[in-house]
Length: 133
Image (cartoon, rainbow, N blue to C red; front, top):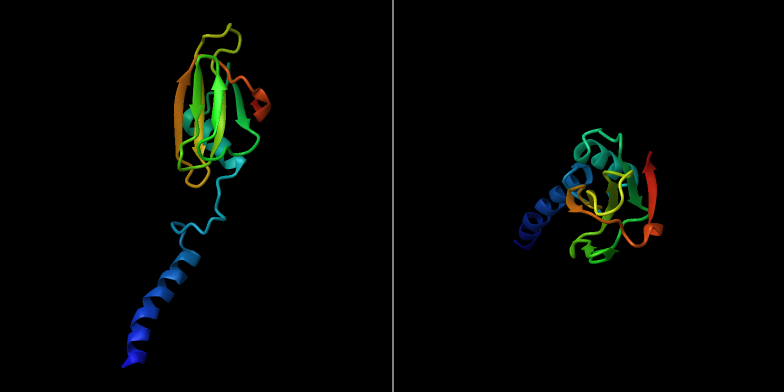
């Protein structure tokens, strides 16, 4: 009788592990959103391919959970539960500051993103690299 209980317990476990080995919905931790994929998300979904007249920057590395980006008059924070690629989009680069800009946080695990409207650049641009133009 003990053998039957063990089989009943382990068969579903084996099936679940087999599914996670082949299913895209199971995340083994190796399927992180790359910088290239994050750029595709932001340029395609956030900017709808309309890059003209903008300067776009991406963080050199994903920022860790809870890290902050300081800008004049405001501090932006990465969600406490996820690491994120951070984009800074200058929507009017020819204007003096206090003009529209955006901070975009792309979850490194899921690709979900959050857009936060701003009016000033980050103090530390050294954490970013320009990707457009």
